[in-house]
Each structure stands twice: as C-alpha cells, then as structure tokens.
Length: 203
Ligand code: MG
Image (cartoon, rainbow, N blue to C red; front, top):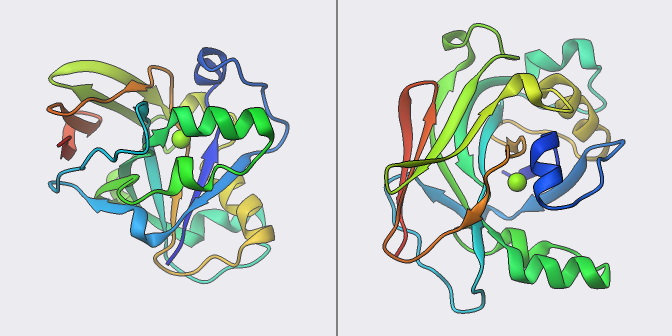
C-alpha cells in the first residue's frame, strides 16, 4: 500500500505558514513505515526539534483505478478515518529554502498515525464533516471539509492521473489551521464530529 498526501488544502492553514495558494493540489507521499496505529506511542526522534501535528481526514481506496473521472471518483473510496501528518517543520523549512524534497520531513518512521476507519455510509454530507485535534485536552485544530480547496472526488481523480490507486491505499486530505509543535509527555486525541477515534502519546 502507499500513502499519498495533499498539502495546502485549507486556506487558513496556507496563511498561517505564509505559503502560496496552489492552483493544483500539492502532493507528497509517505512510505508504509510511517504508519502508526492509534493507541501506540510516538517516540520523538533526535533529528528534529520541531515536529508539528497536522490533523487530517484520511480516505481509504477500495479498488484499483487509473485516470479516474471526477464524476466516478466516489466509487473508489469507501472508508474515512483520521490521521496525523506529523511534519518535522525544521527539516521541511530547510528543504523549502533550498528547493529540495520533503521526503524526510514528511515521511519519517511514525509520521502517519491513523485511526480505525469508518464506512462512508456513516457520513451524511461528505462536504460537511467536522474533525478536530485536542492536545492534553485542549482544542488545537478544528476543520470542516466544506473549507477544502480541493474536495475528495477532485483529489482522487487528480492523484489517479499520476499514481495508479490500489485497494488499501490511503490519502491524507490536508490539515486546517492550528498546527503546532508537539512535546514529549503530551497526549493527542483526534475526533470526527464528537467521536474520539485517535489517541497518541508522545514519548
Ligand atoms: Mg498535512
């Protein structure tokens, strides 16, 4: 399986990092060794001093697809979960300044905690899903899919031009504003609507 991710998909988050608003989705990938199941601890690595949380909704692909038309894209994902796109902001900043890839800053071990996935039938309007992140009980990030620049169907269609999508692939769909550094000893909890789906202790 592979993990594909979209950056800069929420306008308020683009502003907080002083990034340009993209005309096309900004895409990066994470290896499967980035996955971390909810409930497992995240061990803070020694190569970064500025790892940020980015809470995101994650789509799970349910069948093989290539060059998928936007109007059929909804047939290619059937579950939604929560993920955190852990980002080594210090390493990413260096890479950005030099125009170098983000592979390490976004793809290091444990950089993709994920929750259990919920069937899409549990959701009403996919363009109106609320999700949030609490750090030590304090609300830090809150998003609604209605504010995405590129919606789920567009993303699936767009990605399938370049990457053949396969069953089990995951798509991280972008983070809302409120990203910030994590510290050893903290507890991160992720919610879709009022349901807690994700819990990660930072060790
Ligand atoms: Mg992200």
